[in-house]
Length: 140
Image (cartoon, rainbow, N blue to C red; front, side, top):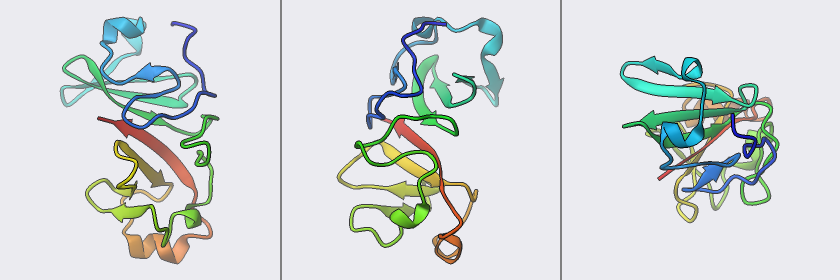
């Protein structure tokens, strides 16, 4: 795999995580064919010890997600492992049921998800002191 990818690079909404840029083809990434999984006609791959997850649509990078182990930050501020309480009742971040995470109208193309899957905002509020950022995803 190309050594241009890193767990420490800045997360850039609508552009890239870890050097994996949105819109690149599977071939551009130079991945080992046996690492690419296909589920329900969607191709996906995890790289850098599972700290980056890539989802392809029509053989192009559609979404990139930072997961546990990723060290880079979003907006030089938000990171994997950060307390989810920083997003509750924030002026900039609001919970989106459709995206199952926190979005920011001024920062399109990014969603922040906590470690409680499929949770409602009420469940997140109740447990916010125990919850953390488990995923930051960028997309077009």
